[in-house]
Image 1 (cartoon, helix red, strand yellow):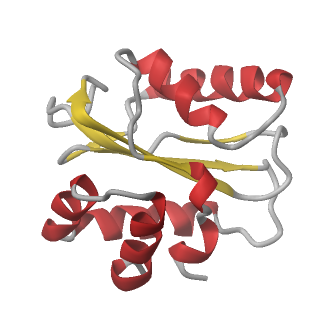
Image 2 (image 1 turned 180 degrees about the horizontal axis):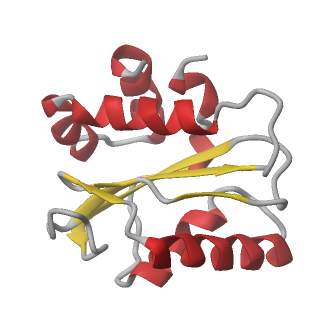
Length: 150
């Protein structure tokens, strides 16, 4: 399955307002359209995951991810903070692009790790970061995925 098939325009936000890591995680969680109780549980699970080590992979990219019972299938979201923010990335550089991956503890399709790998591969393309910063609409993000992502 291609990455483009896993994202929807309503789970893409090109103007994240968060200034802190916690606020960023909260803002990303809201993109999934869950109820408030599920959002709170997911936020706590993501914070716990981040406490194990930052998901900031460098070059302005972070891929917060976790498994949780609040979803019954793989869910993804993308958010952009044009100004960049501290996310404790491995290269200590500000992070601009956030790819959220959430999956149930047991998923029949077993796509969680392959999707994580596909996002990392997509982000390795040196042109992708510039193209992500130039996006004007969520549909532009989906088109970029369609043309460049595995």
